[in-house]
Image (cartoon, rainbow, N blue to C red; front, side):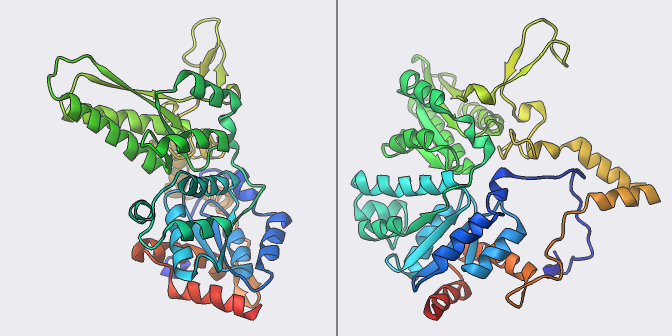
Length: 394
């Protein structure tokens, strides 16, 4: 905000408590820095692709070691494909972190493209117009994934879930977010090669389900007397996405006036991800324990489109907390002003320099590089030049 002239506008957190993230914190220790330093050695051209859900401090330190660009689950694949093309698939080493699940799943995706016999034409049409089997192999061989970074929420898909999907839902469409554990991802990846599943971001999953429902509704037709067709979708992401999918499916069926298509959204989770609501709690009127999966229907999460509804830290962002902040701002008093100070985010980088450069500027750069990539569909000349000049210095 300071960079764009809004440094005077305060930003308040929803809670004065510590807000953490297991994934972000895995990049804040000495191990991550050591991993980057090791990969920065030698004459290879290196680019650090870091998940957006990391601290500004992590971005700054990383960017001071290896040229860095941030990514999301929606654009990570296109980012590494374009970087490999622009800088050279045989020359560029891509260091991806800290999300180990997502990094390993990206490697698995590229492995599947190669092993399943995708032609050069399909790769150009479905992945990137400037890639072929040879360059995809080079890209796959030159990805280095940080081995020790995971999000606690995505551990909900355990082996029991994988066994259930394999044994009881063989004919279902299977979807998996890039951040889910490898076993679940592999099922969806195998299915995706035959258009029986999808792997990717939450938007990729939603688009796939919408496309399949629309196709089924179109095949059966309006007012058809055929038997009802039930589509089953295994949802390999967190619970917060269920609401938006159900709403979207209902809208499609209403718009097509199709009464012969049903869509069943199956959300399989391990037993550890299921919490119990005991007798005496709100809404419970008997002696039994009601087993529920936390999700946005219960007022949790950062968005109804599915963000991190089961994350304990995201649960701190609720409407009551926002109302409290608004009330403290509106009702000016010495006590409220003192309380609001506790809601300001940490500012550890203010006035700090790394190798003579502002730490804040170093932390902002990777985000700016991503924004430019999203706008122009190519890496900025400045980022490419930094990657190449760093290799030349070594």
